[in-house]
Length: 578
Ligand code: DON
Image (cartoon, rainbow, N blue to C red; front, side):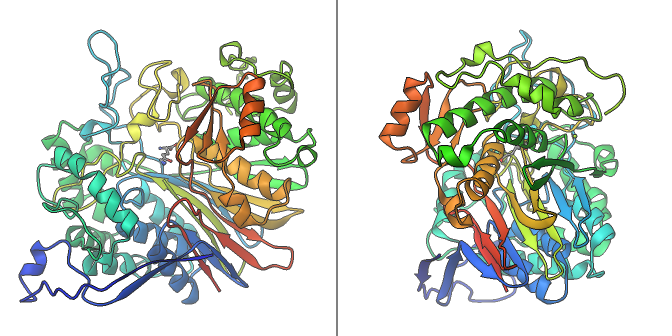
Protein backbone atom coordinates (compact mmCIF):
# COMPACT_ATOMS: atom_id res chain seq x y z
CA UNK A 1 0.00 0.00 0.00
CA UNK A 2 1.48 3.28 -1.00
CA UNK A 3 0.26 6.67 0.04
CA UNK A 4 1.49 9.78 -1.77
CA UNK A 5 1.42 12.49 0.83
CA UNK A 6 2.05 15.63 -1.10
CA UNK A 7 4.08 17.61 -3.59
CA UNK A 8 5.57 20.79 -2.26
CA UNK A 9 6.20 23.53 -4.83
CA UNK A 10 7.50 26.43 -2.85
CA UNK A 11 9.93 28.57 -4.78
CA UNK A 12 10.89 30.99 -2.08
CA UNK A 13 14.59 31.17 -1.54
CA UNK A 14 15.46 32.22 1.98
CA UNK A 15 19.17 32.29 1.81
CA UNK A 16 20.70 35.45 0.45
CA UNK A 17 24.04 34.59 1.91
CA UNK A 18 25.17 31.12 2.76
CA UNK A 19 27.46 31.40 5.70
CA UNK A 20 26.13 33.31 8.66
CA UNK A 21 22.41 33.20 8.42
CA UNK A 22 22.22 29.41 8.33
CA UNK A 23 23.23 29.31 11.97
CA UNK A 24 20.11 31.19 12.96
CA UNK A 25 17.59 29.68 10.64
CA UNK A 26 16.15 26.44 11.84
CA UNK A 27 13.59 25.98 9.18
CA UNK A 28 13.74 26.83 5.54
CA UNK A 29 11.27 26.55 2.72
CA UNK A 30 11.81 23.69 0.36
CA UNK A 31 13.37 25.10 -2.76
CA UNK A 32 12.47 22.28 -5.05
CA UNK A 33 9.75 19.78 -5.54
CA UNK A 34 10.10 16.89 -3.13
CA UNK A 35 7.91 13.86 -2.93
CA UNK A 36 7.26 12.07 0.30
CA UNK A 37 5.95 8.63 -0.39
CA UNK A 38 4.85 6.55 2.56
CA UNK A 39 4.87 2.80 2.03
CA UNK A 40 3.22 0.84 4.78
CA UNK A 41 3.34 -2.63 3.33
CA UNK A 42 6.37 -3.91 1.43
CA UNK A 43 7.92 -7.21 0.51
CA UNK A 44 11.53 -8.22 0.12
CA UNK A 45 13.41 -11.39 -0.66
CA UNK A 46 16.42 -10.77 1.60
CA UNK A 47 16.10 -7.93 4.09
CA UNK A 48 13.51 -5.60 5.55
CA UNK A 49 13.28 -2.51 7.76
CA UNK A 50 10.06 -1.12 9.24
CA UNK A 51 10.25 2.09 11.23
CA UNK A 52 8.16 5.12 12.10
CA UNK A 53 9.71 7.33 9.42
CA UNK A 54 10.51 6.93 5.73
CA UNK A 55 13.92 8.62 6.09
CA UNK A 56 14.93 6.36 8.97
CA UNK A 57 13.80 3.27 7.04
CA UNK A 58 15.92 4.47 4.11
CA UNK A 59 18.95 4.90 6.37
CA UNK A 60 18.45 1.34 7.65
CA UNK A 61 18.23 -0.04 4.11
CA UNK A 62 21.37 1.86 3.05
CA UNK A 63 23.32 0.32 5.94
CA UNK A 64 22.07 -3.18 5.08
CA UNK A 65 23.06 -2.72 1.45
CA UNK A 66 26.54 -1.61 2.54
CA UNK A 67 26.99 -4.95 4.28
CA UNK A 68 25.77 -3.98 7.73
CA UNK A 69 23.79 -6.53 9.69
CA UNK A 70 20.40 -6.03 11.35
CA UNK A 71 22.07 -4.66 14.48
CA UNK A 72 24.04 -2.05 12.51
CA UNK A 73 20.89 -1.07 10.64
CA UNK A 74 18.92 -0.77 13.87
CA UNK A 75 21.56 1.51 15.41
CA UNK A 76 21.56 3.74 12.33
CA UNK A 77 17.74 3.84 12.36
CA UNK A 78 17.74 4.71 16.06
CA UNK A 79 20.00 7.71 15.48
CA UNK A 80 18.08 8.76 12.37
CA UNK A 81 14.81 8.63 14.31
CA UNK A 82 16.35 10.89 16.96
CA UNK A 83 16.51 13.49 14.18
CA UNK A 84 13.48 12.91 11.97
CA UNK A 85 11.04 11.59 14.59
CA UNK A 86 11.78 13.75 17.63
CA UNK A 87 8.47 12.93 19.33
CA UNK A 88 9.87 9.52 20.29
CA UNK A 89 13.10 8.79 18.43
CA UNK A 90 15.75 9.92 20.82
CA UNK A 91 19.15 10.17 22.37
CA UNK A 92 17.56 11.60 25.52
CA UNK A 93 15.45 8.52 26.29
CA UNK A 94 15.84 4.78 26.52
CA UNK A 95 14.52 1.45 25.32
CA UNK A 96 14.83 -2.28 24.93
CA UNK A 97 16.14 -4.47 22.13
CA UNK A 98 15.49 -8.15 21.49
CA UNK A 99 17.82 -9.98 19.11
CA UNK A 100 17.60 -13.36 17.42
CA UNK A 101 20.84 -14.10 15.62
CA UNK A 102 21.01 -16.03 12.39
CA UNK A 103 22.05 -19.15 14.29
CA UNK A 104 18.93 -19.02 16.44
CA UNK A 105 20.47 -17.55 19.63
CA UNK A 106 18.48 -15.01 21.63
CA UNK A 107 19.64 -11.93 23.50
CA UNK A 108 18.20 -8.70 24.81
CA UNK A 109 19.48 -5.44 26.16
CA UNK A 110 17.90 -3.01 28.56
CA UNK A 111 18.91 0.62 28.04
CA UNK A 112 15.93 1.92 29.94
CA UNK A 113 16.33 5.20 31.82
CA UNK A 114 17.18 5.07 35.53
CA UNK A 115 15.91 7.24 38.35
CA UNK A 116 18.53 9.87 39.25
CA UNK A 117 20.43 9.13 42.45
CA UNK A 118 18.72 12.03 44.23
CA UNK A 119 15.25 10.60 43.53
CA UNK A 120 12.98 9.77 46.44
CA UNK A 121 9.87 7.68 46.77
CA UNK A 122 7.71 10.73 47.50
CA UNK A 123 9.30 13.20 45.10
CA UNK A 124 6.03 13.87 43.25
CA UNK A 125 3.85 14.25 46.38
CA UNK A 126 2.83 17.42 48.20
CA UNK A 127 3.02 17.88 51.97
CA UNK A 128 -0.34 16.13 52.35
CA UNK A 129 0.89 13.12 50.42
CA UNK A 130 -1.10 13.86 47.27
CA UNK A 131 0.40 13.53 43.80
CA UNK A 132 1.22 16.97 42.38
CA UNK A 133 -0.41 16.90 38.94
CA UNK A 134 2.00 17.02 36.03
CA UNK A 135 5.23 17.03 38.04
CA UNK A 136 6.30 13.56 36.89
CA UNK A 137 5.18 14.31 33.32
CA UNK A 138 6.44 17.70 32.25
CA UNK A 139 9.59 19.65 32.85
CA UNK A 140 12.96 18.83 34.32
CA UNK A 141 11.95 16.74 37.34
CA UNK A 142 10.23 14.22 35.05
CA UNK A 143 13.50 13.18 33.41
CA UNK A 144 15.17 9.82 33.95
CA UNK A 145 18.87 9.29 33.21
CA UNK A 146 18.97 8.56 29.45
CA UNK A 147 20.17 5.16 28.26
CA UNK A 148 19.95 5.15 24.46
CA UNK A 149 23.50 6.22 23.63
CA UNK A 150 25.03 3.68 26.01
CA UNK A 151 22.67 1.01 24.65
CA UNK A 152 23.67 1.64 21.04
CA UNK A 153 27.38 1.41 21.85
CA UNK A 154 26.84 -1.81 23.79
CA UNK A 155 24.97 -3.56 20.98
CA UNK A 156 27.47 -2.36 18.42
CA UNK A 157 30.37 -3.67 20.50
CA UNK A 158 28.77 -7.09 20.86
CA UNK A 159 27.07 -7.60 17.50
CA UNK A 160 28.07 -4.89 15.03
CA UNK A 161 29.37 -6.05 11.67
CA UNK A 162 30.39 -2.65 10.29
CA UNK A 163 33.13 -1.97 12.81
CA UNK A 164 33.34 1.74 12.04
CA UNK A 165 30.58 3.19 14.23
CA UNK A 166 30.87 6.52 12.41
CA UNK A 167 29.13 5.08 9.37
CA UNK A 168 26.08 4.33 11.51
CA UNK A 169 25.63 7.78 13.00
CA UNK A 170 26.73 9.94 10.04
CA UNK A 171 23.38 9.67 8.20
CA UNK A 172 21.66 11.12 11.27
CA UNK A 173 24.19 13.94 11.50
CA UNK A 174 23.60 14.78 7.84
CA UNK A 175 19.83 14.74 8.31
CA UNK A 176 20.11 17.06 11.30
CA UNK A 177 22.52 19.46 9.60
CA UNK A 178 20.80 19.58 6.21
CA UNK A 179 17.25 19.34 7.47
CA UNK A 180 14.37 17.41 6.04
CA UNK A 181 10.95 18.23 4.67
CA UNK A 182 8.19 17.95 7.26
CA UNK A 183 5.04 15.99 6.49
CA UNK A 184 1.61 17.50 7.24
CA UNK A 185 1.26 15.25 10.28
CA UNK A 186 4.62 16.41 11.66
CA UNK A 187 3.66 20.02 11.00
CA UNK A 188 0.39 19.58 12.86
CA UNK A 189 2.21 17.97 15.79
CA UNK A 190 4.88 20.68 16.06
CA UNK A 191 2.16 23.33 16.02
CA UNK A 192 0.10 21.42 18.60
CA UNK A 193 2.98 21.28 21.09
CA UNK A 194 4.26 24.80 20.41
CA UNK A 195 2.97 26.24 23.68
CA UNK A 196 4.56 23.42 25.69
CA UNK A 197 7.92 23.92 23.97
CA UNK A 198 7.76 27.59 24.89
CA UNK A 199 6.69 26.87 28.46
CA UNK A 200 9.43 24.35 29.29
CA UNK A 201 12.31 25.94 27.40
CA UNK A 202 13.84 29.29 28.26
CA UNK A 203 16.17 29.46 25.28
CA UNK A 204 15.66 29.13 21.56
CA UNK A 205 15.95 25.80 19.86
CA UNK A 206 15.03 24.21 16.55
CA UNK A 207 11.49 23.50 17.73
CA UNK A 208 10.60 27.01 18.78
CA UNK A 209 9.37 29.18 15.98
CA UNK A 210 7.43 32.42 16.14
CA UNK A 211 5.21 31.69 13.19
CA UNK A 212 3.25 28.48 12.69
CA UNK A 213 4.90 25.57 10.89
CA UNK A 214 3.51 25.31 7.38
CA UNK A 215 3.64 22.97 4.43
CA UNK A 216 7.03 23.14 2.78
CA UNK A 217 8.92 23.80 6.04
CA UNK A 218 12.09 21.89 6.69
CA UNK A 219 13.39 21.05 10.15
CA UNK A 220 17.10 21.82 10.47
CA UNK A 221 18.76 20.90 13.79
CA UNK A 222 22.28 22.36 13.87
CA UNK A 223 22.70 21.89 17.61
CA UNK A 224 21.63 18.27 17.45
CA UNK A 225 24.04 17.72 14.54
CA UNK A 226 26.82 19.02 16.77
CA UNK A 227 25.83 16.75 19.68
CA UNK A 228 25.69 13.73 17.38
CA UNK A 229 29.13 14.67 16.03
CA UNK A 230 30.48 14.59 19.59
CA UNK A 231 29.05 11.09 20.02
CA UNK A 232 30.56 10.09 16.66
CA UNK A 233 34.01 11.43 17.62
CA UNK A 234 34.20 10.66 21.34
CA UNK A 235 31.97 7.63 21.69
CA UNK A 236 30.08 7.20 24.96
CA UNK A 237 31.99 10.14 26.45
CA UNK A 238 30.51 12.40 23.77
CA UNK A 239 27.21 12.13 25.62
CA UNK A 240 27.78 11.08 29.23
CA UNK A 241 30.84 13.28 29.78
CA UNK A 242 32.30 16.56 28.61
CA UNK A 243 30.37 19.16 26.67
CA UNK A 244 27.06 17.29 26.31
CA UNK A 245 27.02 16.17 29.94
CA UNK A 246 27.80 19.74 31.03
CA UNK A 247 24.85 20.98 28.98
CA UNK A 248 22.49 18.36 30.41
CA UNK A 249 23.52 19.19 33.97
CA UNK A 250 23.26 22.94 33.31
CA UNK A 251 19.78 22.36 31.87
CA UNK A 252 18.83 20.43 35.01
CA UNK A 253 20.06 23.20 37.26
CA UNK A 254 18.18 25.83 35.26
CA UNK A 255 14.90 23.97 35.66
CA UNK A 256 15.03 22.29 39.10
CA UNK A 257 15.98 18.92 37.65
CA UNK A 258 18.16 16.53 39.64
CA UNK A 259 20.35 14.66 37.14
CA UNK A 260 24.04 15.12 37.99
CA UNK A 261 27.35 14.36 36.27
CA UNK A 262 27.60 11.32 38.52
CA UNK A 263 24.21 10.03 37.28
CA UNK A 264 25.42 10.34 33.70
CA UNK A 265 28.85 8.75 34.08
CA UNK A 266 27.49 5.87 36.14
CA UNK A 267 24.60 5.02 33.80
CA UNK A 268 24.83 1.41 32.60
CA UNK A 269 22.84 -0.55 30.05
CA UNK A 270 22.23 -4.21 30.93
CA UNK A 271 22.23 -7.37 28.88
CA UNK A 272 19.38 -9.51 30.16
CA UNK A 273 18.14 -12.95 29.32
CA UNK A 274 15.08 -12.50 27.12
CA UNK A 275 11.82 -14.10 28.15
CA UNK A 276 11.07 -17.16 26.09
CA UNK A 277 7.74 -19.00 26.10
CA UNK A 278 5.64 -21.21 23.90
CA UNK A 279 2.29 -20.71 22.23
CA UNK A 280 1.31 -23.91 20.41
CA UNK A 281 4.14 -24.47 17.90
CA UNK A 282 5.38 -20.88 18.19
CA UNK A 283 8.18 -19.65 20.39
CA UNK A 284 7.78 -16.12 21.72
CA UNK A 285 10.98 -14.22 22.55
CA UNK A 286 10.30 -10.96 24.35
CA UNK A 287 11.54 -8.49 26.95
CA UNK A 288 11.94 -9.33 30.62
CA UNK A 289 11.56 -6.81 33.48
CA UNK A 290 11.92 -3.88 33.85
CA UNK A 291 9.49 -4.23 31.00
CA UNK A 292 6.18 -5.82 31.83
CA UNK A 293 5.71 -6.53 28.12
CA UNK A 294 7.20 -10.01 27.90
CA UNK A 295 5.59 -11.43 31.04
CA UNK A 296 2.18 -9.93 30.25
CA UNK A 297 2.26 -11.12 26.61
CA UNK A 298 3.23 -14.66 27.63
CA UNK A 299 0.54 -14.74 30.32
CA UNK A 300 -2.09 -13.57 27.83
CA UNK A 301 -1.06 -16.16 25.26
CA UNK A 302 -0.94 -18.96 27.83
CA UNK A 303 -4.48 -18.08 28.91
CA UNK A 304 -6.01 -18.09 25.45
CA UNK A 305 -3.99 -21.05 24.15
CA UNK A 306 -6.51 -23.60 25.42
CA UNK A 307 -9.53 -21.99 23.78
CA UNK A 308 -10.54 -22.50 20.12
CA UNK A 309 -9.99 -18.86 19.15
CA UNK A 310 -9.97 -19.44 15.40
CA UNK A 311 -13.28 -21.26 15.69
CA UNK A 312 -14.71 -18.34 17.69
CA UNK A 313 -13.65 -15.96 14.90
CA UNK A 314 -12.05 -12.51 14.71
CA UNK A 315 -13.69 -10.05 17.11
CA UNK A 316 -16.52 -12.47 17.75
CA UNK A 317 -18.34 -12.06 21.05
CA UNK A 318 -16.65 -15.16 22.48
CA UNK A 319 -13.14 -14.27 21.33
CA UNK A 320 -13.35 -10.68 22.54
CA UNK A 321 -14.84 -11.58 25.90
CA UNK A 322 -12.11 -14.18 26.51
CA UNK A 323 -9.31 -11.81 25.49
CA UNK A 324 -10.73 -8.95 27.58
CA UNK A 325 -11.06 -11.14 30.68
CA UNK A 326 -7.51 -12.41 30.19
CA UNK A 327 -6.26 -8.82 29.88
CA UNK A 328 -8.13 -7.76 33.03
CA UNK A 329 -6.35 -10.43 35.09
CA UNK A 330 -2.92 -9.96 33.54
CA UNK A 331 -2.91 -6.17 34.06
CA UNK A 332 -3.96 -6.68 37.66
CA UNK A 333 -0.87 -8.85 38.15
CA UNK A 334 1.20 -6.19 36.41
CA UNK A 335 0.07 -3.54 38.88
CA UNK A 336 1.09 -5.56 41.90
CA UNK A 337 4.00 -7.74 40.94
CA UNK A 338 6.03 -6.03 38.23
CA UNK A 339 8.91 -3.64 38.58
CA UNK A 340 12.68 -3.50 38.17
CA UNK A 341 14.02 -6.92 39.11
CA UNK A 342 17.27 -5.36 40.31
CA UNK A 343 15.34 -3.69 43.13
CA UNK A 344 12.22 -5.77 43.63
CA UNK A 345 12.11 -9.52 43.32
CA UNK A 346 9.66 -9.99 40.45
CA UNK A 347 8.06 -13.44 40.84
CA UNK A 348 8.60 -14.17 37.17
CA UNK A 349 8.52 -17.97 37.36
CA UNK A 350 5.35 -17.97 39.45
CA UNK A 351 3.62 -15.49 37.14
CA UNK A 352 4.40 -17.67 34.14
CA UNK A 353 3.61 -20.96 35.84
CA UNK A 354 0.99 -22.86 33.83
CA UNK A 355 -0.94 -23.94 36.93
CA UNK A 356 -0.99 -20.40 38.31
CA UNK A 357 -2.17 -19.01 34.97
CA UNK A 358 -4.99 -21.56 34.74
CA UNK A 359 -6.00 -20.69 38.28
CA UNK A 360 -6.24 -17.01 37.33
CA UNK A 361 -9.07 -17.89 34.95
CA UNK A 362 -10.94 -20.12 37.40
CA UNK A 363 -13.55 -17.40 37.98
CA UNK A 364 -13.90 -16.61 34.27
CA UNK A 365 -17.56 -16.57 33.36
CA UNK A 366 -18.13 -16.94 29.60
CA UNK A 367 -21.52 -15.27 30.04
CA UNK A 368 -20.55 -12.30 32.16
CA UNK A 369 -17.82 -9.70 32.70
CA UNK A 370 -16.00 -10.03 36.02
CA UNK A 371 -15.92 -6.58 37.63
CA UNK A 372 -12.31 -5.45 38.13
CA UNK A 373 -12.83 -4.81 41.83
CA UNK A 374 -13.38 -8.55 42.22
CA UNK A 375 -10.12 -9.29 40.43
CA UNK A 376 -7.23 -8.82 42.80
CA UNK A 377 -3.70 -9.55 41.71
CA UNK A 378 -2.91 -13.22 42.00
CA UNK A 379 -1.12 -14.41 45.11
CA UNK A 380 1.42 -17.13 45.64
CA UNK A 381 4.26 -17.87 47.97
CA UNK A 382 7.17 -15.69 46.86
CA UNK A 383 10.11 -18.06 46.28
CA UNK A 384 13.11 -17.32 48.47
CA UNK A 385 15.76 -17.62 45.71
CA UNK A 386 16.40 -14.90 43.22
CA UNK A 387 14.72 -15.04 40.21
CA UNK A 388 12.89 -8.35 34.22
CA UNK A 389 8.18 4.92 21.82
CA UNK A 390 8.78 3.98 18.78
CA UNK A 391 9.43 0.55 17.43
CA UNK A 392 11.72 -0.71 14.68
CA UNK A 393 11.75 -4.21 13.20
CA UNK A 394 14.68 -5.36 11.07
CA UNK A 395 15.72 -8.61 9.36
CA UNK A 396 18.99 -8.79 7.42
CA UNK A 397 20.20 -10.98 4.55
CA UNK A 398 21.68 -13.56 6.92
CA UNK A 399 18.46 -13.89 8.92
CA UNK A 400 19.51 -11.89 11.99
CA UNK A 401 16.40 -10.27 13.47
CA UNK A 402 16.15 -7.23 15.74
CA UNK A 403 13.08 -5.90 17.53
CA UNK A 404 13.61 -2.55 19.26
CA UNK A 405 11.25 -0.27 21.11
CA UNK A 406 12.55 3.09 22.30
CA UNK A 407 10.85 6.06 23.84
CA UNK A 408 10.86 9.48 25.43
CA UNK A 409 7.57 8.36 27.06
CA UNK A 410 5.09 11.12 26.13
CA UNK A 411 5.18 12.95 22.82
CA UNK A 412 8.48 14.88 22.92
CA UNK A 413 9.05 13.52 26.44
CA UNK A 414 9.34 16.17 29.13
CA UNK A 415 9.21 18.83 26.34
CA UNK A 416 12.58 20.03 27.63
CA UNK A 417 15.24 20.46 24.94
CA UNK A 418 18.78 20.55 26.33
CA UNK A 419 19.95 24.11 25.72
CA UNK A 420 22.53 24.29 22.92
CA UNK A 421 22.51 20.50 22.55
CA UNK A 422 19.25 20.28 20.60
CA UNK A 423 17.60 17.10 21.88
CA UNK A 424 14.51 16.35 23.94
CA UNK A 425 14.76 14.76 27.37
CA UNK A 426 12.38 11.98 28.36
CA UNK A 427 9.64 12.10 31.00
CA UNK A 428 10.04 8.46 31.89
CA UNK A 429 9.76 9.07 35.65
CA UNK A 430 5.98 9.03 35.12
CA UNK A 431 6.22 5.30 34.45
CA UNK A 432 6.97 4.79 38.13
CA UNK A 433 4.10 4.53 40.55
CA UNK A 434 4.27 8.00 42.17
CA UNK A 435 1.84 6.79 44.85
CA UNK A 436 0.23 3.35 45.27
CA UNK A 437 -3.04 3.17 43.37
CA UNK A 438 -2.75 6.59 41.70
CA UNK A 439 -2.83 6.17 37.90
CA UNK A 440 -0.05 7.47 35.65
CA UNK A 441 -0.63 9.07 32.23
CA UNK A 442 -1.67 5.72 30.78
CA UNK A 443 -4.13 5.06 33.61
CA UNK A 444 -1.81 2.37 34.94
CA UNK A 445 -1.62 1.90 38.67
CA UNK A 446 1.28 0.42 40.56
CA UNK A 447 2.57 -0.40 43.93
CA UNK A 448 5.69 -1.15 45.94
CA UNK A 449 7.18 -3.18 43.07
CA UNK A 450 7.30 -0.04 40.92
CA UNK A 451 7.90 2.61 43.61
CA UNK A 452 10.62 5.20 42.98
CA UNK A 453 14.11 4.41 44.25
CA UNK A 454 17.46 5.93 43.27
CA UNK A 455 18.92 4.22 40.18
CA UNK A 456 15.88 1.98 39.75
CA UNK A 457 14.34 1.58 36.30
CA UNK A 458 10.68 2.44 35.91
CA UNK A 459 8.34 -0.34 34.78
CA UNK A 460 7.64 -0.35 31.07
CA UNK A 461 5.00 -1.85 28.78
CA UNK A 462 7.29 -1.95 25.78
CA UNK A 463 7.10 -5.35 24.14
CA UNK A 464 9.77 -5.82 21.48
CA UNK A 465 9.11 -9.38 20.36
CA UNK A 466 10.42 -12.00 17.96
CA UNK A 467 8.45 -15.15 17.13
CA UNK A 468 9.65 -18.50 15.79
CA UNK A 469 7.42 -21.11 14.19
CA UNK A 470 8.66 -24.67 14.36
CA UNK A 471 12.12 -23.37 15.18
CA UNK A 472 12.32 -20.93 12.24
CA UNK A 473 12.12 -17.14 12.31
CA UNK A 474 8.45 -16.23 11.84
CA UNK A 475 7.77 -12.68 12.94
CA UNK A 476 9.37 -9.54 14.38
CA UNK A 477 7.01 -7.05 15.99
CA UNK A 478 6.47 -4.34 18.56
CA UNK A 479 4.79 -1.00 19.05
CA UNK A 480 4.53 2.29 20.90
CA UNK A 481 1.28 3.02 22.74
CA UNK A 482 1.91 2.97 26.49
CA UNK A 483 -0.30 0.44 28.22
CA UNK A 484 -1.90 -0.58 24.90
CA UNK A 485 1.41 -1.89 23.51
CA UNK A 486 1.01 -5.32 25.09
CA UNK A 487 -2.54 -5.89 23.89
CA UNK A 488 -1.72 -4.58 20.41
CA UNK A 489 1.16 -7.04 20.03
CA UNK A 490 -1.11 -9.79 21.41
CA UNK A 491 -3.86 -9.00 18.90
CA UNK A 492 -1.64 -8.62 15.83
CA UNK A 493 0.00 -11.97 16.56
CA UNK A 494 -3.37 -13.68 17.04
CA UNK A 495 -4.80 -11.99 13.93
CA UNK A 496 -2.09 -13.73 11.91
CA UNK A 497 -1.85 -17.13 13.58
CA UNK A 498 -5.44 -17.68 14.71
CA UNK A 499 -7.56 -15.52 12.44
CA UNK A 500 -5.53 -16.23 9.29
CA UNK A 501 -4.93 -12.64 8.25
CA UNK A 502 -2.07 -11.42 6.08
CA UNK A 503 0.17 -9.13 8.12
CA UNK A 504 -1.16 -5.87 6.69
CA UNK A 505 -4.78 -6.79 7.50
CA UNK A 506 -3.63 -7.96 10.93
CA UNK A 507 -2.06 -4.59 11.67
CA UNK A 508 -4.69 -2.39 10.09
CA UNK A 509 -7.59 -4.18 11.82
CA UNK A 510 -9.12 -2.07 14.60
CA UNK A 511 -8.05 -3.00 18.11
CA UNK A 512 -9.54 -3.17 21.58
CA UNK A 513 -7.95 -3.05 25.00
CA UNK A 514 -8.64 -3.68 28.69
CA UNK A 515 -6.13 -3.00 31.47
CA UNK A 516 -7.99 -3.99 34.65
CA UNK A 517 -8.26 -0.38 35.81
CA UNK A 518 -10.11 1.59 34.66
CA UNK A 519 -12.70 -1.15 34.24
CA UNK A 520 -13.56 -0.34 30.64
CA UNK A 521 -13.00 -1.86 27.22
CA UNK A 522 -11.40 0.71 24.95
CA UNK A 523 -11.91 0.22 21.23
CA UNK A 524 -10.73 2.19 18.25
CA UNK A 525 -13.15 4.54 16.55
CA UNK A 526 -15.30 2.70 14.06
CA UNK A 527 -13.66 -0.53 15.15
CA UNK A 528 -16.55 -2.52 16.43
CA UNK A 529 -19.85 -3.21 14.75
CA UNK A 530 -22.99 -2.10 16.58
CA UNK A 531 -23.75 -5.78 17.17
CA UNK A 532 -20.32 -6.36 18.77
CA UNK A 533 -20.75 -3.34 21.00
CA UNK A 534 -24.18 -4.52 22.02
CA UNK A 535 -22.95 -8.00 22.85
CA UNK A 536 -20.11 -6.65 24.99
CA UNK A 537 -22.61 -4.49 26.88
CA UNK A 538 -24.88 -7.48 27.39
CA UNK A 539 -21.96 -9.33 28.94
CA UNK A 540 -21.61 -6.45 31.40
CA UNK A 541 -18.62 -4.65 29.88
CA UNK A 542 -18.39 -0.87 29.81
CA UNK A 543 -17.04 0.31 26.48
CA UNK A 544 -15.37 3.49 25.34
CA UNK A 545 -14.13 4.56 21.93
CA UNK A 546 -10.71 6.13 21.45
CA UNK A 547 -9.09 7.64 18.37
CA UNK A 548 -6.45 4.94 17.93
CA UNK A 549 -4.27 2.62 19.95
CA UNK A 550 -0.65 1.68 19.29
CA UNK A 551 1.37 1.87 16.06
CA UNK A 552 2.65 -1.64 15.35
CA UNK A 553 5.63 -2.30 13.07
CA UNK A 554 6.16 -5.91 12.08
CA UNK A 555 7.82 -8.28 9.65
CA UNK A 556 6.37 -11.67 8.74
CA UNK A 557 8.57 -14.35 7.22
CA UNK A 558 6.21 -16.09 4.82
CA UNK A 559 6.37 -19.85 4.18
CA UNK A 560 8.34 -19.30 0.95
CA UNK A 561 10.85 -17.13 2.83
CA UNK A 562 9.58 -13.81 1.45
CA UNK A 563 9.67 -10.99 4.00
CA UNK A 564 6.51 -8.97 4.43
CA UNK A 565 7.16 -5.74 6.30
CA UNK A 566 4.23 -3.66 7.52
CA UNK A 567 4.04 -0.36 9.35
CA UNK A 568 0.89 1.01 10.86
CA UNK A 569 -1.59 2.90 8.68
CA UNK A 570 -2.59 4.88 11.77
CA UNK A 571 0.57 6.94 11.24
CA UNK A 572 3.34 7.46 8.69
CA UNK A 573 5.27 4.25 9.32
CA UNK A 574 7.40 3.11 6.44
CA UNK A 575 8.45 -0.36 5.35
CA UNK A 576 11.15 -1.09 2.78
CA UNK A 577 13.33 -4.01 1.89
CA UNK A 578 14.92 -5.75 -1.02
O1 DON B 1 7.76 2.35 28.71
C1 DON B 1 6.56 2.51 28.58
O2 DON B 1 5.73 1.65 28.76
C2 DON B 1 6.06 3.87 28.14
N1 DON B 1 6.98 4.89 28.55
C3 DON B 1 5.85 3.85 26.67
C4 DON B 1 5.34 5.16 26.16
C5 DON B 1 4.65 5.05 24.87
O3 DON B 1 4.52 4.01 24.30
C6 DON B 1 4.11 6.30 24.36
N2 DON B 1 3.50 6.07 23.10
N3 DON B 1 2.38 6.19 22.83
